[in-house]
Length: 118
Image (cartoon, rainbow, N blue to C red; front, side, top):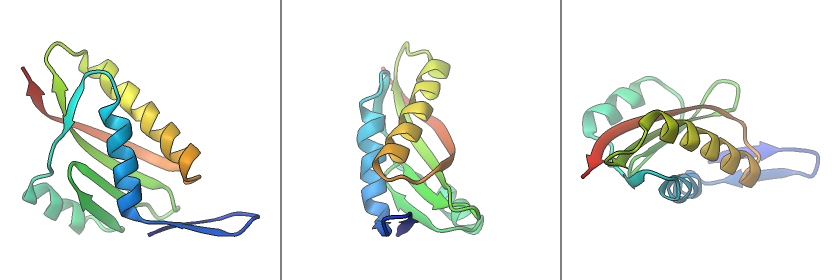
């Protein structure tokens, strides 16, 4: 659960909602074929690094010590896509979507290209 407090009051957002919001925003980006599942090894390593985390299909959301979000995305891209441009677009779209919808700062977005759709 992510909690935001402002002058109006306190808002709590579930990690499941954040994960689904991120998945829908990513799937709308150009060149993204799908969101890949996170393998067991990466999940275990990520859980050892600390912080709160939500493990869903291809999206890991955790909070840093300053209250910002760190988002790890595992995606499958379409063949022929400029990966650098797609990752840059995804990073900006996710940051904008989360900050506008929820009001929580996004500290970092890590995008991992795990597969390619031919």
